[in-house]
Each structure stands twice: as structure tokens, then as C-alpha cells.
Image (cartoon, rainbow, N blue to C red; front, side):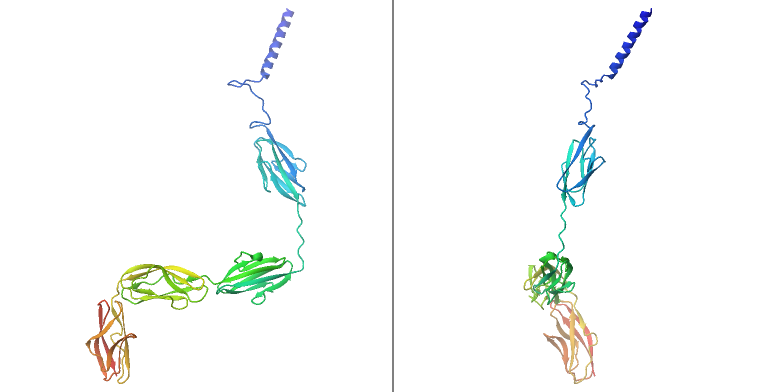
Length: 405
């Protein structure tokens, strides 16, 4: 009986050991194939190693974020695969950081790299070059002034020394901060050439004088521009006049011409009317709108502008002078009264169509104006009808009286 119990106990122990052995064996994945153990160098898990190398004859340290590299002493560290690591280089005294290479990094800013593989980044440190000693002694600043056309001006300096004008060169201690100023008299300042201000159109330029320096300031004529943007409208048959004026340019007589389009019928433009102006004048003959381009040209510059003139229909003819009562006169003293009308189409024709003028006076039509004139011989008040007729047949009449004392 005792032997049987021993046998049963032995069998139970064997079964327990067998079960434990099966639990420790790898489990076959579903779908077939064998399971492979994780490798620290592959897949989305595991780690990757970031190594920092230093090159160059300078010195410095490289640190990482996340922490782990302080190179210095610790120049290699493993991080989880996919980790983004930022490296920062700090040069030692007497050195400068020259830049990164490897790991997709370049330049001198922080290096950021993502560790999807073992990666090596090199940081280069170079010795810094001490600045040269400042210059000593004195240096001469020379300014040349160029004046084109109507452009004039002066150059001065601060500290004082240049006044060009007359004094166009001066010496200053080495390292002096000098401001040169171009002041325009006529025209415009066009800019600096040569020296530290080359290419600048600013009339003020500041620089440290560390060598003998020459520079040029140029003054030019102001660009030619038209002062008028629009021209007045006109009326058929009515006298029309409008000036066009310019400013700037290189000086001399401006010549005006129409280079595109045309004036309204009946108008003309003078080649010039004054040094920088012209006149458009005449009597428009029909209603129309005309667009035209005017060019102004002087010795070496020019400008163009497009204008429009609209000609409207005739204005109703009316007598504007004299009114119902003309100027009075005196027997035996020369007398005159100007006659004016507006509207209609010039020229005008004047006549007396009723009553009578004072004895000794008559109606005069002349190139220098229409008027009543003469020497009255009889005192009294005389009433008459004054009539004006225009070129197109319109007419206007007014009863007027003249008193002779």
C-alpha cells in the first residue's frame, strides 16, 4: 500500500513539471509563422544611438535635449527610436562655433535630428580671430561736388571741417564719426558715389573715418513736371484760352507739342508762351470732347501729360456792359463807353436799333474793342436801343440811356 502511494506522488510531480515547462515556451502567433524576439536596433521600438564628434582646432561643448549628451565628457547616448533630439553647441573662450555636419544638420544654430537610425553629428569649433587694433593718426576726407543742369547745392560735415562750397577736404583723427550733409539750393540731390555712402540717396550719411576717404555728391535738375492736371471746358463760338505750365527740368525755354490726339476744332496751341508755359486758345466751332497728349521738352529733359477738353453748345448771347444806364458825360469833353457781351459765337456786331445817341457820339467797332465814343455837343438824357448780334445769328438788345451834363 505504501509503494502505491509513492508511485502516485511521483506521477503527480512529473505532471506539474511538464505543465510549467509548456507555459515557458514561446507562443506561436495567430496566422502561423514563428514569433521573433525584439531587437534594440529595429522596428518602432528599441533604441538608437546618437554620437557627437568634435572637429576643428577650437574648443567647446555640445549638450542635448532631452538630456544625456554633454560633450565635454559624454559624447554618445542611446534614445528611444523616433526621439527628436536637439543639440546645442557652446564655444569656449577664444573659440567660435563653425557649424554642424551629419544628421541632416547644418549652419550654426541648434541641430535638431530625429533618431530613426544610429546617427553621428559633427560639431566644428574654430579659434576666434582677435579684432585688429584700431587705426591711429589722422585721415583726410575729400568730397567732390557734381552739379548737373539746374542742380546746385553744398556739402557740410559734422564735426565741422567740410564746407563745399569752398572747403571740400578736411582731416580728422582716426575713428572720428563723421556726418556729411548735402543741402540742395536748386534742383535735387541725386545721391552719393564712392566711399562709405556709395549708392545712398539720403542727404545725410554717417560713418567712422578709418582711412583716407573720397566721395562724390551729385546735384541734378529737378525732374520736369506738369503743374496742370485738367483744362477748362469751352463753348461753341465763345473765345477760349487756357494755360499749361511746367516746373523743373534742366532749364531754358520749354517747347510744347501735341504727340497724340488732337485739340477741339477751332483751337490752337502755341509752341511756347513764357519760359515754362504754353497757351491753348481760339473759338471752338462744334460740340465735342477731345483727348490729346502734350509733350514739354527743354535742353535735356521732358515730360508728357494727357488732357481732355469738352466743348459744349453755345451760351445764350447777352449784353454785359453797359447796363440800362451808361456812364454820363460832359459837353465838350471826350467820352467813351466800352461795349461787352457774353455767350453766343464771336465775333460780335453792335448797332443802335432804336432811339439815338447823344449828338457828337458814335458807335465804333475796332480790333481793340467795341465802344461808344466822341465828344458830346448837347446836354440832356438820351435813350436808345443797343443791339448785339453774334456770328451764328443770335442777337440781344437792351434799352440804355446816357446823360450829358
